[in-house]
Image 1: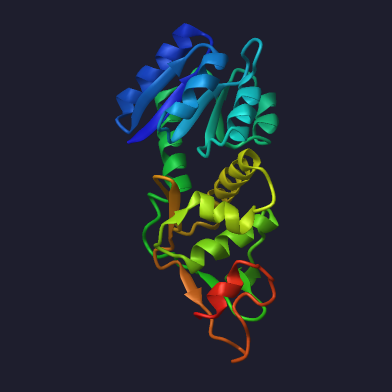
Image 2: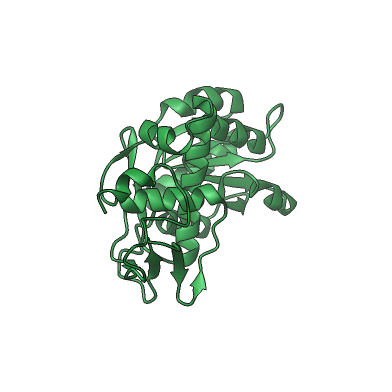
Length: 256
């Protein structure tokens, strides 16, 4: 059951979208807001899996609302609703999973459910035909088939290795921040962590691998679900993640 918040300044559209989502059976509406300012205040207090935000709202657009929520540390995907398709490109500059043209239809709801299942990894738990091949020692790399994985950012790659070395173990978010973002303020660090996890989930979805990152209380657990094959050391003297130079990995090297 996906816990969803809807923000839409047109009350009839807000009611229609809420009814369609709840009627489908996979969605639970945990918040409906006509005011983006009220939404900005209340959403951080809610347990949410996805946000459905109208783009064209007075005084604060859905894009601005999404940006403010991301900066405040919201780590869930955003789905934008719009009457104008030209806003789609702008939407994907923020933490956007998808967008749809208003009004929502039953087919739109079905597509959103499938999109969220792919994003969170709930529909891809079978072993993939082509796993990721990972070399952890010496010249570290991640490949899909014969091709190196293209990471959206360097920190996304680093967090992947971090989670992989702690697979199926709870990684507390403040410990992650101490290890990867030690020199920046807490608010910015949290925003960076949530954005990076969003990028990772998107990448796994695009690669079609069943890697799942679950949020558990104050941390995260990554499960690879047999989608990773670890390569053998080419050099017995090679160190763990030697080519990457991650400071946090040196302690793990002693136990490798």
